[in-house]
Image 1 (cartoon, rainbow, N blue to C red):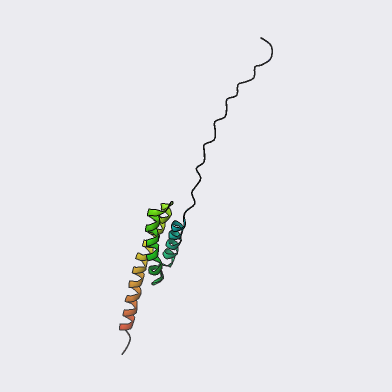
Image 2 (cartoon, rainbow, N blue to C red):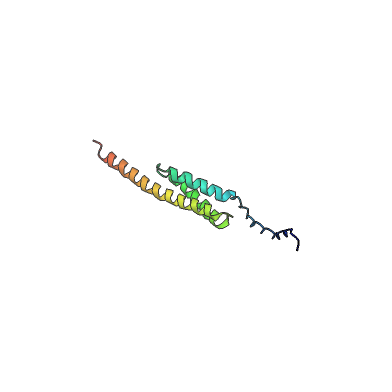
Length: 107
């Protein structure tokens, strides 16, 4: 035995886990999300929420079934449905107010 220390055995380092690349959203899912957000924000304005909400629902349904990112389609679908429902309530309130005011006019 010599006075030299034996070199420590090096174990090979474990390979880093492979990263799964995130697939970019296709255009259908992206547009479903955009139209859903805009419809939801415009849902408080009479008629605008309906005009944007109906195509948002259609795009959301298509994106949910055909897209590589169905969660964006589902989010667009939910926001569009909420926009349509909110807009129907707002439209009924506006129509009731207009009719009430028209009936209260003298003459």
